Image: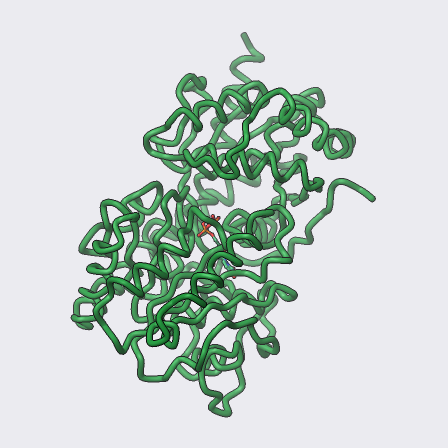
Amino acid sequence: MAALTQVPIAPASMERFRAVLGADYSQVEAAIGEAERLLAGRVIWHVNSTARGGGVAEMLRSLLAYARGAGVDLRWVTIDGDEDFFRVTKRIHNHLHGAPGDGGELGRREREIYERGLLESAAELTALVQKGDVVYLHDPQTAGLAPHIKSRDVSVVWRCHVGLDRPNELARNAWAFLEDYVSSADAYVFSRRTFAWEGLEKEKLWLVAPSIDAFSPKNQDLDAEAVRAIVARAGLAHLDGQAPMFTREDGTRTRVDRAAEVDQEGLIPDDSPLVVQVSRWDRLKDPTGVLRCFAEHCRHPEAHLLLAGPAVAEIADDPEGAEVLAEVRDQWQRLPSEVRARVHLACLPMEDIEENAAIVNAIQRRADVILQKSLAEGFGLTVAEAMWKARPVVAGRIGGIQDQIVDGVSGLLVDDPADLAAVAEAIDTLLDDPDRAEAIGIAGRERVRKSFLSTRHLVEYVQLIAGMLQAQDGVADR
Ligand code: UDP
């Protein structure tokens, strides 16, 4: 079996952003012109470890579709790996977030597993890329490919989506582990300045914040009937006879068919306030903390809580998902019965990624408050997704969440997301005051419109490639 899998990219037109961006769309047009000039004859490769589940895949799906629609010749490939390989890369990921993960080390043995795990992917990729191509390697899983493909005279961009504001010993060790590979890249991209590792060459450093796609099934407008019908079809609310419809990436209208796998004692009543957290089953998202926060501190006895995440068997590069979900289920079982009756756990079907996205969309729109109680977060796409839907968000003052939410204006930031009472207080404040919650939601949408849509991201990627190629020409001239 091949180690690399090519993910299909259907072209999409960026024209649809004209109405959303108004006069600012001219920057997008300028970037499209610049990309045509710069990228003629080159293929742009994006390499990561999964085509579904998690923020990186989510973003690539949209960005690459728009870039292809603008005429850029692109490929998206994912690497394969065995259990040992993904256990090591998950450990690196946790350490980069400052967390011990499974408690294991990143030593010589892990380096061997990591390098061996990439050998086949490296050989296949090296045979495919051509001189002049630009290769984006995403996150720790693919960093080790850099030295291999540099032999082909390509430009390598290492795009790191994770980080923490104040690095600890674990993070520094993970940097040391990756540094040998990453240092051969021509550019490093981090989501925010505090994430950039100490000691990297400043000239190669770029900062680019992530983004969401306003038109994808995840974020497209859904009217109230569609929201009700999709949440009901997922198995979380009463069926009302409406068809649960959404629009696919290719423009066709379709229906949500699959239900989520749900742990709950009853459906969510239509008139109950709903607090929602959507995320992978990952300890850094603190799902058990969310349960305790809701059960022990929230003072709205009529409110319900929904924790939603992907069906775990489906995410190949996330070996801890099933374990974390089991912990959450166990804790749910042990909740006092009165609270358990108001808490819903949902594993969303992953067979059809667009259907999954439509369910997330409807759940986020059904929410009165969206929580992202992560203990560490590179960016937190779920925050931007909620803000775009004009939902008020409560989240920790950590990582890229701080770039998205202006506290008290476009969401509420809690200084320490591990402080359950403080998180509950922020949720209660919003449930107490629906007018304020609405104003915060509207401000959140405007903030995403201005700063966190795919178009801004693509314009910055064109600037990055232009800058990187110029720097390389400069070096070649010398
Ligand atoms: N997500 C999803 N289905 C799920 C759970 C999560 O599509 O069942 C999406 C979520 O909407 C978001 C992404 O996965 O787009 C998670 O990205 P984020 O940056 O929040 O966190 P990450 O998973 O990258 O740590």
